[in-house]
Length: 301
Ligand SMILES: Cc1cc2nc3c(=O)[nH]c(=O)nc-3n(C[C@H](O)[C@H](O)[C@H](O)COP(=O)(O)OP(=O)(O)OC[C@H]3O[C@@H](n4cnc5c(N)ncnc54)[C@H](O)[C@@H]3O)c2cc1C
Image 1 (cartoon, rainbow, N blue to C red):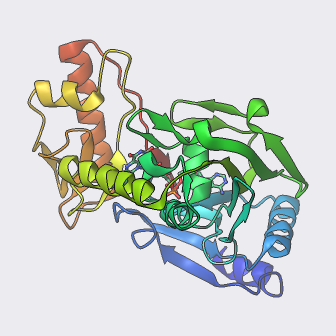
Image 2 (cartoon, rainbow, N blue to C red):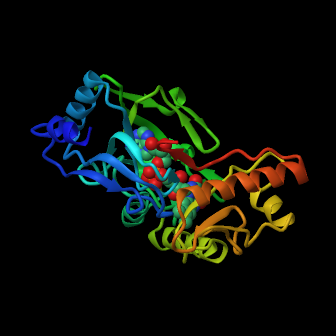
């Protein structure tokens, strides 16, 4: 199969193509098996070619952001994994609209908004990941969600056609944006307000500081594992039943924030997923709460 992908991608992609690329390197929690083929399209035209070719040949496609909300199973991902992080990361300003391509970092966008004296993105300071991943997850913090400042999203359909959708026609929900299968986020346009640089910067610093105080940033993780249920923060319930510090192999429920699972160094995806299941079971048994996963789990079972 690998050989076929070498043939399939030859002449199709000028950007980088990696075979058997360890997803430990491409996810923030550093677990997971290899992606059979990891492609970094150079631009939109190349992405379109990849999507059309993949569709014609029935190759499964997966869009990877920065892998900061992702657990890849140990057997890896079959098919083509596409990363927009090298060829599609421009940011530009159009009045009070900030337009950012999906492969750029959300943090770079925030930095840019500070430079341009535009306010609205500060609560997202410190959320790792790309603009595309942020929109796909409707990333949020401190009561704000990315949808609140989203004006429109440009998407590639499964056949390569490009459409722009205003926010009113997008199905954002808590930590999700529902799209038809195989659609790709290409670009987001964000409506911000004019502000004063020092004040914006001050808010960015203060949100980043709160994050440093409450999250285990010195260990690899995938951020919050569970969505907060209606009953209150997931971390509170996990903490209340004494699961902080619970370990499975190299995976451990963080002492600092019970909704984070950290990789102590040698964790496998099986360790992390086993620990997630154990936490889910205990919280259900002892609190009657069914935790829903925020992290995405992909790859061969
Ligand atoms: C230390 C830490 C702190 C975090 N804090 C927060 C927080 O405060 N708030 C929060 O909401 N999240 C937080 N996260 C989780 C994560 O950073 C966000 O969900 C982030 O937006 C994911 O972006 P990504 O580029 O890494 O996406 P990935 O993890 O690579 O992908 C996530 C999902 O988005 C899809 N996707 C990515 N790009 C595209 C695209 N262009 N088109 C279509 N689908 C796409 C992927 O297929 C996948 O299903 C944290 C994570 C860590 C490690």
